Structures are given as structure tokens and as C-alpha cells.
Length: 377
Image (tube, rainbow, N blue to C red):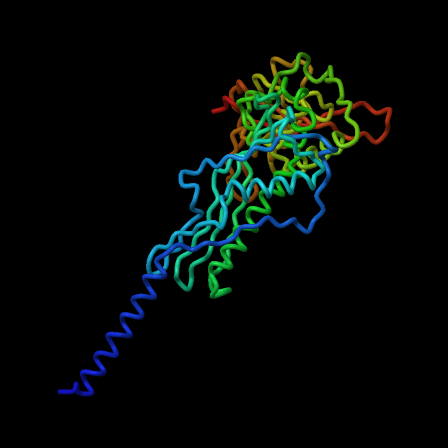
């Protein structure tokens, strides 16, 4: 007896379901994507000056043969076409060579790259994104001993809806993140200075301390005389002078205590700035009003001094003192505020920057640019 139309229709439905299920099972496999380093369009400074370095790449990730996962109907593993360590090695070789370093396995100067993160992932949702993240720890070594290190990374995020070919977008995104991180490392001012002057920096940098962020205890040293005796200026030329100028401009642009500490850690003998530490006292500079609305004193400035530095005495604005939290400041509204002094603040740090004089004969002056109150309450 031949099957009826209803039976034939049910059979066709079953065959279609088997085909669909087979497609899902195939989709449950791994996704393999290429990752490639691309030179940035911007110019890369040639800091290397032909100096030989020994490149070493280490993959510290727990699972080294995976670079992420795709959360679709089933979770799919994402793998690279070649080992990540090889891809990163090729990228840094290209970038360092472009920066005019000579790669040599017998060089005394080492450039060690540890792969901390190298991944890309996405979810099969309309509103979700594809995200790639790369993080490297880069250390400069002299005769096998670490001179300094720095962590450099990059993250890229893009909406999935830009393309239906998600693996292709993921490949491009991860390649872009890696390329940018490698480029940033190759042009990094601190790392290049460590490569060019490892012996000179070894005395001022703690080998166990990473350079980002710098340790405050290592960076700040009290001066013997409070702003009277200046440290001998640096005698830098050529590429070293260019690196120093660039890092100083970065510190001025950021204008934060951490940025100044990072510069000072590298250029301790620079005449551009001073770092004073000690017990800080902040006093109010009063002006009396006669015949005006207010019959009380008017605070116009705050005067700073330090017991350990008798020659230090600087005036700052009330706004600056409030921002650095070295006075008690409580806004009352309508431009009024309740202001009071604090007890002497131990372990305070004052950063001063040399001011440009209008004439060469003018006295050199330093201006307070930031204060860390230390033991202030």
C-alpha cells in the first residue's frame, strides 16, 4: 500500500529537520581566523639608531591555542591559523626593524614580550558587538636582568550588524588591536629610552618596578636644599634629547602628579622640575575689607611652607588649595564658601615646574603645579 500525501509531507518535514540539524552540528565546530600585523599609516620614529636587541616572545595565557569564543546557537571556539606567539613575534620584529633596531639573538640588550591577553569574541544577537582585546607586558633586559617594564594594550569594539561575515570582521578587529598595541610599544618614549640608556637608568629605576604606573616611593626623593640648589641639568643630544622633550611635553599636557612622577623617575637630574617631600603647612593669606559689605577678612591666597625646606614658600590660589585638598573647603552657595586650615600634613609632596623667564637675566622661578597631601586628614 503506497503512502498517502499526508505521510509523504511528514517524511519531507523530517528530512528537512535532519538537514537543518546537520547544519547546526557543523556550526558547533571551531572557527579559525587569520591575525596579521599591519604597519600604521602614520610615520614611526626611528629611535633604534641601529642598536642590536634580542627579541623574546612568551605566551602566558592559560589556553594558548584559543583566541576566544563565539556565542551563537552553540558556543564555538575561535582559533588562530598559526600560534599566537609566532604572530606576535612577527609583528614585533616588523615594528622594531621599522624603528631601526637590529634584531640579533646574541645581543646583550633584551626585549621581552609577554602575551597577557589576546582574544576576540561575539554573541549572535542583533544588538551585540564584536570585541577584541590585546595586552602585552614588555620588559627591557640588560645582560639578562630586567631594567624596566611596561604593560601596553589595545581594545577594539564594533557592532555585529556592520557585516554578516562575523569571522572576517573578528579577524580584522583583532589584527587592528594587535597592530596598534605593537605600534604603541615600538614608539613608546620610556621603553625606547630604556633601550638606549639601560646603564644610566639602572641606578634610578627599581628593576622590580614597572614603569606604568611608577612607584611613588621610588620616584620622590627629598632635595638636600629647599629650592636653592638645583640638580645638574641633563646633557642629552640627538635622539635622547628628542625623547626627553617629548616625555616632558606629555607630562605638561596631562598635568597630573602621576605624569610628573613618571618623567621625574626617568630624568631625576632634570632642571625642568623639582619634587619636595616633607611636612606641609598651609596658611591663609587674608585681606581686610573696610567700608564694604563684608566686615570680616577675605581669603585671597594660601601660603605653603615646609619644615624640611626652609627656603620653600609659595603662594597658590584658594581654588588650587581646595582642588588639592590641603585646606578645608565647603561651598555655601552664591559663590560663598566656608574655608579653614588643616593641621600640618606629614609626607606631603609638592611638585614645582620651572617657569620661563622673559629675559635671560631674570631670576629662575619655580611654580607649584600639583600637591599630594600625604597624611592630610
